[in-house]
Image (spheres, rainbow, N blue to C red):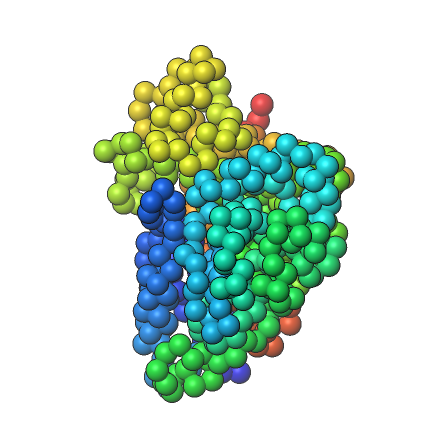
Length: 480
């Protein structure tokens, strides 16, 4: 077969990139053709994404992908994945009718507290959706939008989550994809359609949504760029829209289900794959989110606040690392320090989006009469060890509720490059951590395109082919 060339548009909350993937002789090679920063911006006390700026970067990346193709080659397909929950409200023509809020905006706090304090409703919504009550849920965001701007129900005719919206801009087709829909607290946990009970509770118009499509659905040909021979047959494919779902698909998991997945970045997303959801009183108490795999199955997971703690803390230090060499020096310095006498409570809501992360950490420590670290290396050690304990707590909870025993932790994402964090996780969890040199979200994005194009039979088949080619580092737990 001729080589297949594919583009993965992979948008994260702090950066985005466009990756050109080439599939040849059952091997996938990657080339990053465009990378750009991303951040939300505040205006009038609220936080928003620069959607037009992101779209401009996507087009720049696609042009770069085309330019990087071998002479005479074509781009077979393109897929988009992003972070979860955020959305665009559009009219019939797809025109934005409301600004795109960022999920860290605190506008949902009133609704969050109201649902938390209404135990019967909380249980009912969790039973219906399998998603816990968290400040960033699209359900709470949409509830606030409708409550504060009731005329929006006349202006908007569709709600497209961010990968859905960019898919529309690329292809002209509006569709809600399943994995991104499952992040919203609006999808029925027992089907692949929306929960009418949840939509009614949050007063979100049901007509804003269409039944979600499964990953691999072809949406049409690229229409966003001027005609080009390399784009003449390029398909826009609805890959798993949620970046975590893509990251999971990329990991060469054991078929026996004994691997725990950890996608480590701004958030630490800990979970596993299952044919059934993990619900009930214990799951609700543990805040288990039953997000979905692209094929409709489940990814029970929990969010542990991740390297957002370190990213925020760095802002208060002039000596923060600016290169890979600087990072290596910082991690080495942190490793040489003794283990902290006490760890952070990583579930503390004060760490969610403080004006100063260092000040928020210091305040928690002061309240507990624990001395603050003396320098950046000290904060780095404290944060990595605390996250390791958070990962271990999640593992223990999943084992208790599911009856499984997890023998390994498969780790991808930016945090997988941090050997201090990997070792802290292995030590706290008591099992090996396997860190993959893997662009997880982009690889999962591309893998789903290959399955859709019938170049690979299934995600399981892709893992079997791709896994042996990966460079991996094994962190064994320290003997106690």
